[in-house]
Amino acid sequence: MELIIVLILIISITLIFLVRWRYNYWKNLGVPYVAPTFPFGNIKGMGKEYSQFELLRAVYQNFKSNSSPIVGLYYYLSPVIIAKDMELVKNIFTRDADHFINRGAYYNEKDNPISAHIFNLDNPKWKTLRTKLTPTFTSGKIKMMFYTVYDVAERFVKKLRNEVEVAVDGEIEIKEFAGRFTTDVIGSVGFGLEINSLDNPTTEFRVHGINAFEKPNNSTLVNIFSVAFKDLARKLHVIQVRKDIEEFFQGIVHQTVKHREDNGISRNDFMQLMIQLKNHGKIDGESLSVGKLTMDEITAQCFIFFVAGYETSSTAMSYLLYEFAQNPQVQEKARKNVQQVLAKYNNELTYEGIKEMDYLLMCVNESLRKYPPVHTLLRYCNKDYKIEGTNCTVKKGQLVIIPAYAIQHDPDIYPNPEVYDPDRFLPEEVAKRPTCSFMPFGHGPRNCIGLR
Ligand code: HEM
Image (tube, rainbow, N blue to C red; front, side, top):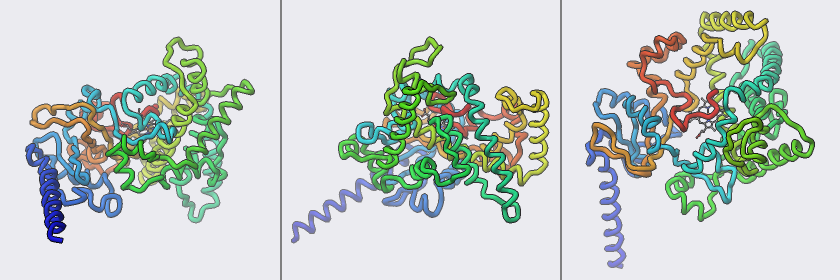
């Protein structure tokens, strides 16, 4: 009995010592930090009482006047870095991107091939895949898909008119409606399918897509475990995407590819480009050979195009429309901008015309600044990196957080940040600000592939 008590005491003292040693990490390096508490570090209540971007905004503001380019936090027992200096942020994204090319996400190619998509993959697999997919996102290819999107947009406008007519007090839930629109767009350009969730919101495709977000396969604890101990989690067959969702997407991609190949059907969409990559390792008519894609790879990429594209785009659309409603004079100016460009193009909406709607773009950018759909960007250090002007070396395996929301609401960069003011995006205003002070699509080689 006494021996057990002694053992418990020794284990407890050792644990206390280890935790204190761990929580002295930033102090010992002389990096400013927020005092942690065991076991959550600095994230107690995150996700329930407050969101991550609120924590990061508070930390960013509190430490802004401190000359250190970084602030230290603890996520549970792990020391993580908040990059707050604009030069450092730029270097992490671009000049020194080879130290920070991964996001550190978990995927399991063997048991859950759909999770091995471009967003999750680490280098060098990521680089190989990005090289294969980049030619499918050139402006020429997007232009080719323009009328596929146009068709869905026409249905959207028609449907919107009907909904507004029958709505109580003229109010409709625009976020839900925009989500149905972006689902149909991505279903069409990504998978080559007529989803029509505008008319049928509970269509299987949309429900499975939403479930991929809202009904994760694992608890937060398992997710944290699988990110922290990736190899072990793979050995334990931990999967990220639910099997029913994986099977659903595998089924529709296989059917679509087979249908097109059996019937010699070709369409202006990503699916067609990916079929070309699958069969020839290059896009038809182009000389650059980038390597073949497998069926599993096609499925995983279609899946991530949907997951990464539909929610972000519908959030962006909703906030833009919200600000138009709040600021009728901005709305009017944007409308005039659209009408002028349309008049130049025979009153037809064209790809070239959209690119000339400069004021509209300023409005879009300002709502992406104020409400970035992705408020926090992550980079996982893959080789030690000495931060210039400090004694601190970011260690391999450490997480670096770029607080996009906080930077885009910094009153020193964007005075009166809560005010919606598209003129902030006049070219002469943009030129006054640091390069990476606007990052709704990230920056550098790992930025959003769907940016165009
Ligand atoms: C308004 C709409 C969108 C926003 C705000 C957005 C934002 C982002 C952001 C912030 C990232 C991370 C960038 C970084 O870490 O530097 C990202 C990555 C990504 N996005 Fe988007 N996105 C949008 C639309 C789309 C669409 C439509 C697609 C698909 C066609 C897409 C596909 C991807 C993919 C595949 C990645 C991962 C790229 C990689 O790791 O190589 N996104 N997006």
